[in-house]
Length: 326
Image (tube, rainbow, N blue to C red; front, side):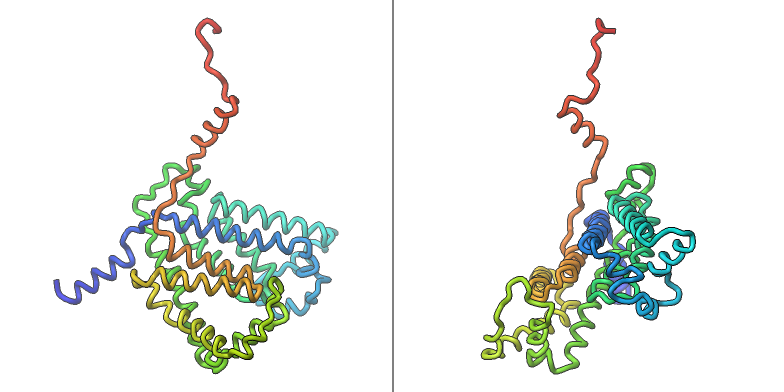
């Protein structure tokens, strides 16, 4: 085998060799993404109108200015139904209920692709024109992937309904590689952009981050010791640059994969705890675990067996009649 054939064989193996998880990573990605969006929605649901309504904290005309003309916004939906005499409160409750319905449908894999499309459109209608630190883009990207991936083929209600659907020729390795490359590029360019300035080299970026008005609300740590030991800030800054920039290299090497993965997870734990960016940090950890940690297939959920055993434990199933009772 010459060099060209060897390279071709390596490329084919890398992109098309059967995935060890048997598609479980897609199910984990679908369920996790839906759960994150649902939790995020529940965390702001009491203030939903104040954040996104026509009379919200951010005036609707400002949000409309920041939006693309090709997107339908939540305020436009409110205005549309007001034209038919439906008040904003009713529209808001109906919108939230519809959003939760499609999130749950996506989570459990019911009409999966359609649910993913509707969830993406509703999500964009809410958050377009509203800046959410980092997580907004990752949520949209995840929903887009769930639309183009065969998301309903694994651990889903769709898979139970369409039992005769053939999955034998479905190779999900290419989809996994797409996610992995996305994560690698995110970290590489994040690290590269940080390298362009001086603040991450001298520790100033870390100092400014921990002193943001929104940070350090849980532990209320006195960071004055950093001023006396500035080398700690420099080491932390260099560590972030090292982890992010070299992520696309060492995450692919089997001997260093776990080291780099857990170093990245530790970095995000610190971001979440000390900068109060809980959703951003946890969602980035979720992406890392999805693409580089899950290596075994999850057992298929057999609902018929589950419900049968459930009813048997409670003696609900109809007993078999004896011959003399007939």
